[in-house]
Length: 378
Image (cartoon, rainbow, N blue to C red; front, side):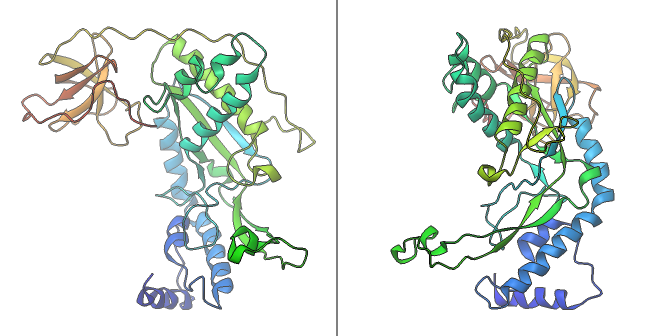
């Protein structure tokens, strides 16, 4: 950061009448008044951490409205629940930021969250390492290259059929959710491979202050096929994720007890004990793809629905007569709300993906850049 910017930030901190902001993420990324190499860095980082914790309190009223809207977006047939942290959790500890340690915060509101990608990665690894070694005839299907694992989590070519939504912290546990914590590496020169140093009993410990999280989170998964079988797959994926959160934990420092979450109401008097996970049951067959009835150029009646791939703001519709959906890729989408009807023209039939590409009627034709049969990452 240029010195002129640091000088401007320093003046803001010196004005005691100014509230330091309501977005903890913005403060974390932009408002460190001293460089890490500066002698006054420790005091500056302490003040910044205190301001980040205060910002969480100031955004609470707005966050309640955003949280309620998010719950509406994660519509059924999603499988969801509230999970409580057992102790502390730290997500994004190694992410790049102005402090020595990182923390994942929601971009718009600066509030703690667990990214859906982190939940998916944890569940996929747990499925392979735990369910995949069950002494049962279906055990191998849960391995990394197994049929069930590919169906739920996908491959490098296919993102799978289960959507892992970002886990937002509940408004009730938001205030006070950020906690100061400390770790004390004893062999910093060895860990940083400085001059080939080896760990010795004479090394000086170096305490590092960081922020961890304690609270409750709304965890949800859903399937991109709305059917009875799709619901069974959703339940199965949620069961795997629940076990992984309870047994392994998520984020950094899980080997020292951080990151474990349990479903609300399942915490025993002993904080280190949770209800045992339910073993896997029969896995339902994957539902067959729907038949696409229309061809390119057909004008069809459609209904607007939420985009199943979570592209915020994308206009996504389904055909009323065959239930096949797709995005509007050409022209201005009809200005209708979710659940309202419109008419669109089909500009592409994606047989492998089981969907259409729509365009506004009369829209200028443009090349469609979506490759047939390819599925974006979730």
